[in-house]
Image (cartoon, rainbow, N blue to C red):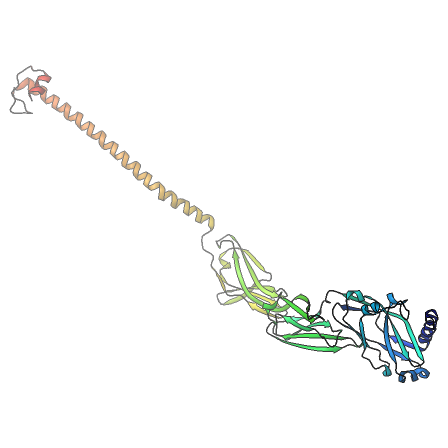
Length: 408
């Protein structure tokens, strides 16, 4: 039979196939270079043609780009060597044409057609399947449920396992102190997946933590093919580490702000309580509590933080408002400073003034003594000849002052 006649005959059989048989294959399949690919395949056949299922049926796959070369002299051994190795693993007698393509490379990306043959019956399907072979490994698919502190959580990571004989190894890093279970799942379309389930008990320390799902598979040269996906955990938990901070100086008449801080997910709502003289009173319902300080604000303050998972209280903050205002304190401080620095100045001034007065009195006494001496001298000059200042000196009358001092 000539090639042209064979193509016409195949076209007629394909029409018969379409009318008499129905094939079920994926429209598109993705594969990784160096791995294999499982092709799920099933078909239906009319009752009168089921007899061909027992006559040594054979299924082969033809590439669309080489369609014109099949069954011709131009389809050489070189073309044959570039074709992927395909093995049928399904039971054709049970209408299962599932196949495995092995040792795929990016050169094998193409359309493929199924050809069914048996004794006295042969047909090539007109329905094509596209295969895309990539040099990179497919990213894992991750399922993360809602996580709550103290409740067991499960993280699931799934990767395709197209080659049953070379399944990937899937794990979690870090393991968060939990257990990892790996299992293989057969899908409805006959493809397989490998999943790794991380079972652990989350805490608030795990919130916003990065966790990696890692898939490892060896290619035909025993080189590892790696893929991974990073997720950020979102853990809900009741309020932790609730505490109060104070802004502003606690003085009578000053503005004071109390702020309640807590670590909670979802964020907490806050309530303020003050205990005074054994009586507890709610004084606010927001994260910040502001007031102008008076004596009535003195007491014990507690902040309560609460979300849908629980509540937590802060430690007690004791606030005592002093009995003097800040302005009065500044006035007292100014007076004290004036007294501290002004008193020495006054004392120094008074001492200097006293010293000046003492020197003035001494000068007056000197002048008075000199005047008195002069008067006595005159009396002496007029009445006596003997010097009262120096009894040993004898003066004559009518001597001048210079002579008198000289002789004395």
